[in-house]
Image 1 (cartoon, one colour):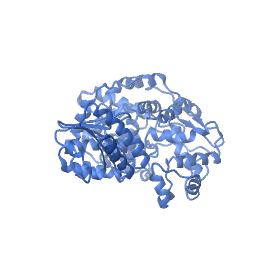
Image 2 (image 1 turned 120 degrees about the vertical axis):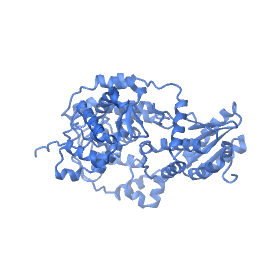
Image 3 (image 1 turned 90 degrees about the vertical axis):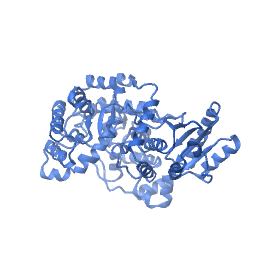
Image 4 (image 1 turned 135 degrees about the vertical axis):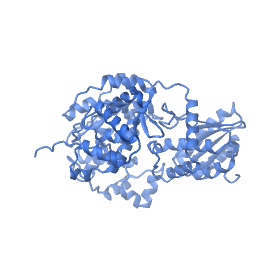
Length: 526
């Protein structure tokens, strides 16, 4: 049978693999089978690992209360018997080319995008290969504290080479998406009429559908749109332009949905571009721009990867993608050592722009695992969003309070990851006292007691040596009873004030108290 001719299609990244951490988790489940021949039996062993690590949730888990309870617990693990039960009751109504119907095809959906990024290569009856880049990704995640900067650099190493028409895709659109974006941004930044404006969010649909690597023509198209309608147009306007770029037939017009080209694909595009570390959000998520702290990396990419070889062979593409560019890996960020003022200014900015009700609503959405619709917030991973929103809420509701988050930021002051270990998530102080605020989405006993309350005690003991009027606040969607008991024990044993709040308790309290010191009360006292 003749191979199907490639046709123009919108760029689409799998939403099952939204960040390097998740890709690393799946690769870690596959790693024990490296160099083994990929068979159905091998695939099922990988599937068992994926379910054991709770990286994939078959429908049956949500339907069986006992399985759902284990899945939602940070401590409990599925037994071998339960894993077999889950697999047996989840036949997977799915078929991928080159794989048998069912779990074999589901395996391919797990690892298809990591294969396109050059982290792994596999085929039925062939040995499983993990590249140097794939191993670096796994190693960065296996550390006690994941090396987030290294994760971003490894992902950048992949995205600066990733081709929309790679051999794993039948797409006639041919470019390197990240390079195309950087080239257009470069022209816009040179354009004095644009006053440094980056790429408008709705213009990203053009990038998703652009047919080639002619960045000047794309820049000209953006300029034409801005001259004609500026920034005030609906999705229908840009959608029609994109359909023309794709040369869409009537049949394809029905297949290329506006909700995908102007919505889902744009959100995922932004997440992938921003996860490289070289792209920043501007205008509350409405524009994409250079992260100026990574200008050396950007200049190197434009110099080294603007001209690239196309590949027809899967093997040669894998070798190219899996190779780690030593110059890129060696480059460090030019971020200033002291970003405290930028972090504080950014929190104050959003505290003024967002209403209190909106911030509380977004916190409740996080607890209920309801997606955000805010342009900027929905692009922040949930744990990062929680730290950011708690910081904003503190600024909005407590008087004369300095709030310093511990998370790393980009040049816009927006968080790129959660606060690292060994430091408080947020430090607050006013003229009377100081508080260390720790937040987490984890609700299990071990995570809250061993990973949160015990380190909080250690940090608080150290802080009180120089700042006696220091207390700690611990915030989570649900507080495990053992975490409350441990906090009470440390008050009795060490006279340490560690006050646990559910997110809902925090929302109720912070609206009423006015001053930081009143957070240092139990819920019953307040």
